[in-house]
Image (cartoon, rainbow, N blue to C red; front, side, top):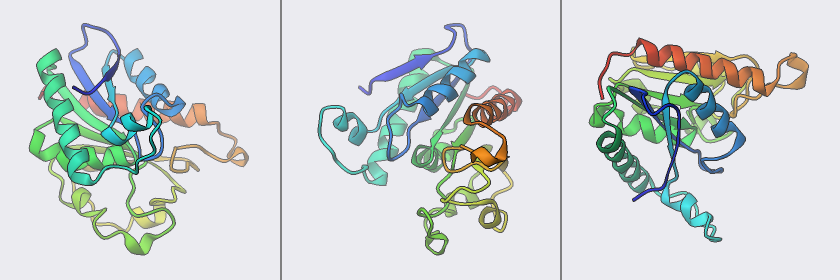
Length: 213
């Protein structure tokens, strides 16, 4: 059984499962800010770690698991959350790689929605290698929100705006944000501000979804 980190009220009728990215765990300041913001809005937030990240907590340094392992882990967490909380509305998502895996399992798991925080449209700084990364968001049927930094090295605004994304995908651009939605100091914005913007976009997205666990 995967260890879960849970925030939000016990009475919440909406559950959001958030997965971490390839390089950092489920309890980073970024992940905590997203979870805390959603929880303050009355949403139950469930965080978990993929097997490779759980292994890193034991002192090992394995690379990220292959996609089939990541997808199987996410499916198992979806089943566990449904069984444990029976939410009226279940949404899945995550940061970078976690958001990509969520998108890959969204249609098959029948969740109400999916959210990505910094979607990896291509490897960092390599827009010519987007093949295999964009197909899911071009075909997706489940409603999806992508909060993307305007200067994200995994897919900036100029690159993403040219993609034939599925009509079910909604983009929310974070001004001057990088892959972690952090702006430059010269922008006059702080990470705290842009992260709150992302949380507000997620809350609004979730509240528009129909009950559909």
